Length: 289
Image (spheres, rainbow, N blue to C red):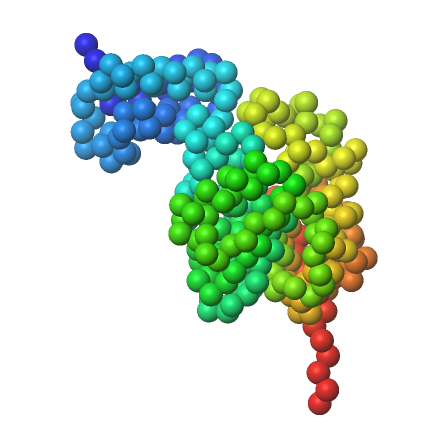
């Protein structure tokens, strides 16, 4: 007899729990929904709906991959971030709720109808920049990444969200080739994990995320040493910046931006109450009275 939605969910939860995975309830539900072409509402309102043999086979494949610690985002090829849904591959970091702190801060600083220009350094899937453009219809953005494969993912996401007309993408090493005083806002989630720490991470990250998006050098700060002065160079006077950091990097990253001339440097904490985003601004031009 075929599985019902509710029974499939229960068995999937038990299977993932037996594999020692964190969050088996949510993972199981997402995999059942995708395999059975169902929604969360379907599981509640039509729990005894039968899965087809093909859907059962798909679910079994999904669960096997998850048991081997492949991220759900890679299995399904998508991940929700802020208020948008993004395509995700092994060529980009899986967007995480912590990174939404960059978006939240930027929107507070960003007038709703202002035609700001935004630069996203290390755009990856496009999560930060596309979330901002979706909220600020007068804004335009440039996304830079050293990975052509990552740029292809960002390009597909921009098209899927109807934002392709307001975003440009460039393959480059950070700000190489850009002029000065170009952007009202610069955002970035650079690689910030110390190289020797990567082997201690969860398999979902260590074995499935692109190393180029993780490795921050011997102390995790290599990219901030480059980015701090460069972000200040490409910002317009009075422009803002917001960069994600590791939870224990506040003092060092704040110091790098202050040394580069940033003003109003502060650190914003994420929903887990950990230091997550260093933000500030470039000195505004003085006006003559």
